[in-house]
Image (cartoon, rainbow, N blue to C red; front, side):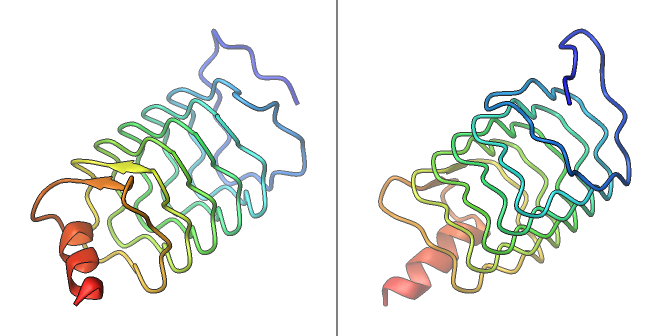
Length: 142
């Protein structure tokens, strides 16, 4: 599947069975409710993408750019978000259970109601001071 970088793809509700090239440009893509379970989206440019309710369980999002993306209610269980940029991402009610957040930037991300159980993070994981993630990490350290 090739997506022209000049066209904003509208892929609502799709079941992804196609290979997406690493670093694919899906800026502002409408992936509402898309089934991307296990998809290889390494380094994908998903700035401002609509991923509300998308299934990204066990997806490879290593180094992906999800700045300002809407991931409200998305399933990211077991997803690899290592070194991903989630600055200002909306993760309201998202399932991040067992997600790898090593080195990820979640500064200014909305994590209200997100499932953070068993997330993997390290000293390079960034978040805003006093944020839900910051408080979760501080709680786990004690």
